[in-house]
Figure 1 (cartoon, rainbow, N blue to C red):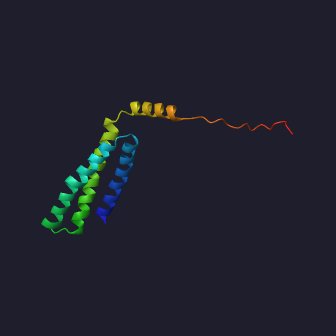
Figure 2: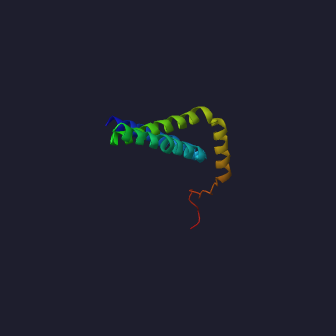
Figure 3: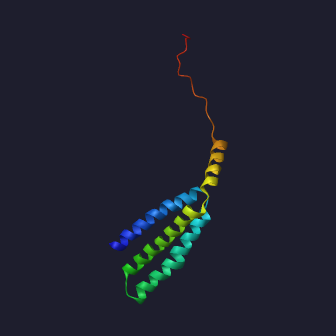
Amino acid sequence: MPIAVLFHIFTGLSAVFSSTLNALGKQPIVAAFNLSSYYMVGLPFGLWMTYSYDWGLIGIWSSVAMAGFIKCIGEGIILLFIIDWESECRRSSRRIGAQEIFPSIPSTTPSNSK
């Protein structure tokens, strides 16, 4: 149960971080963290713990929790220390300004025509 709790905490945080990076247009960063943490670190670690130490299912879930932790920490560092939020806000404002169309709002005042 403790491993499942860790897995859900890190997976939940990672989903928020990944979604934020995706919204910023940084999909290659998310893909790199997914590949490196889950397939290059988590999978070999899980196989090693499962077969070398006879951890069985606990070894597999431990590796998934560890990979989620690595991904969560990496994406969190990128979001907190590397992303320039001032420039991202300016980019977003420019995009919204270029795409926003203000439709004409119908008048709510009653007309005197009968």
